[in-house]
Length: 102
Image (cartoon, rainbow, N blue to C red; front, side, top):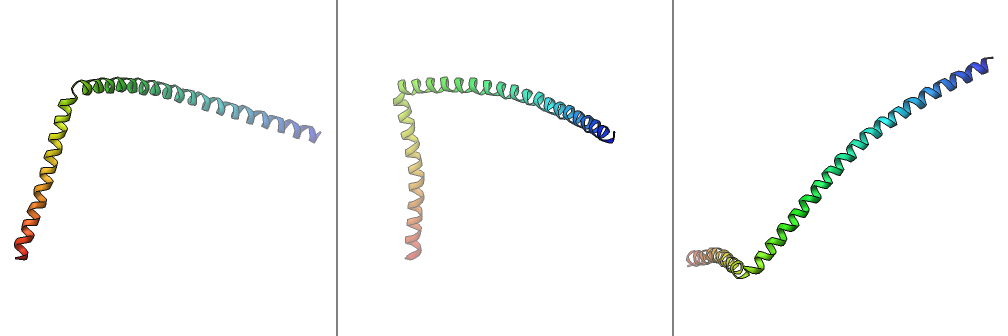
């Protein structure tokens, strides 16, 4: 008879454990599904933003093609400004070195 009671206790404990584990798994799956929905929404927003950005770059590229001469002039102006700024500093250093050594 004690064997039968032990078997009943074992099956009761096993049943409670299975129910608790199943509940925990379902609770976790519910939250994972919510997270996946949020990820899907974020991915859709990123996809839309990247499409908008692609269209902006295409428009910018077309504008650069049509106004390429203007852009080239601006780039040349910036390069000239940078080389002038760095060129004058190096000349000052050379002239200061000559006066110090003399």
